[in-house]
Length: 199
Image (cartoon, rainbow, N blue to C red; front, side, top):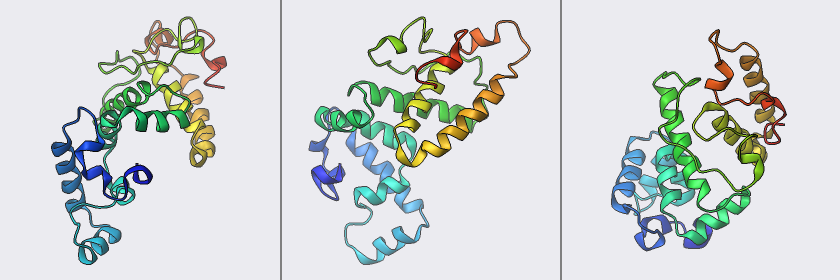
């Protein structure tokens, strides 16, 4: 985004589409004002633009929710460029970020996840591996696990962590909750461990 629009391009509402830019920017200012990070203190005392920060600086402070809203509000050509890096259609990535923000918030509040029907569902990419019978639907835990694994596998700095994370998830799934149809309640097909995205 910074390469396309410059350090402060995110402060210009014309660089977005159907987006409550003022509310979003106010949240970024609030996040900057709350920060005690040395790089924010340095920018504040050195440059006149504060509380606006360059996009590569505010990205360090931005909440996951703010990032999700930014992606959703981007012009299609910008979403397309970012989505392409993950092998996704431009309309899919914002729904994944929105869904992951929702799941992250459930986790932060220690809510039960394993058998939950998602209130905020991600769109699924085209392709058979994202459709039944490979993936029963987009409303249960397994879909979210596949999305996380898919994204981490395409992020060079997360590949090593992704392998460890996948191992820990498999260990948990080897000891499912002692209730009838626990795998079904998590959206896991019988051969889930052999799903092309998982392996």
